[in-house]
Image (cartoon, rainbow, N blue to C red; front, top):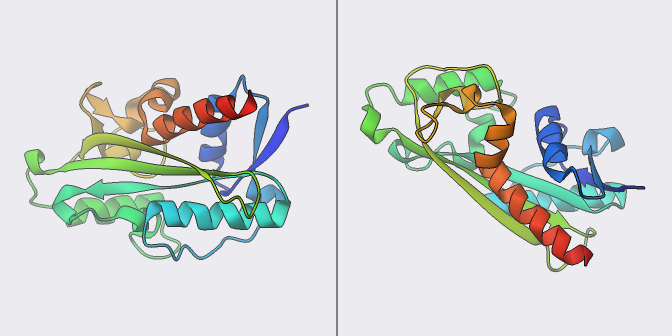
Length: 200
């Protein structure tokens, strides 16, 4: 009987990605939307604060251990923006497409060499709502911003994030490759290793 962990997200892409990575551990990640957990206001000023806020709320409503991530894109030419506001860069309720268009518009005139960027992911695991020692894992994925979208895999800013090691956008990578390289993949690998250590 696999143990359930609630994921403080209703994003099906994230749920799928995380379950693929946890295959082999006796754990099943279930989205908080399955339990009717309300979305919380992300009032933190850092990725880690927001991740802890989300995990705490999910654990409180479900009485289950919780995983939450807060991730985003930092673009050097924009002083680290969109950062913690990546999901709502073009305003509250903005679609991936609207956020992407705003990013490209904000970078008009910025030459290729100055379009360096990275995805950051802060992943938090709480055993329960009041866990005083949450597991905190960070992943960073370096790249640069393309002039136009390429590829149909992934979500969010993947189509404009150029991965120099593979000479393509993140959205052109097969999912398995992306899971190994990506910021979330890196953070998850660290989390899986930490959970395995705890299990022994």
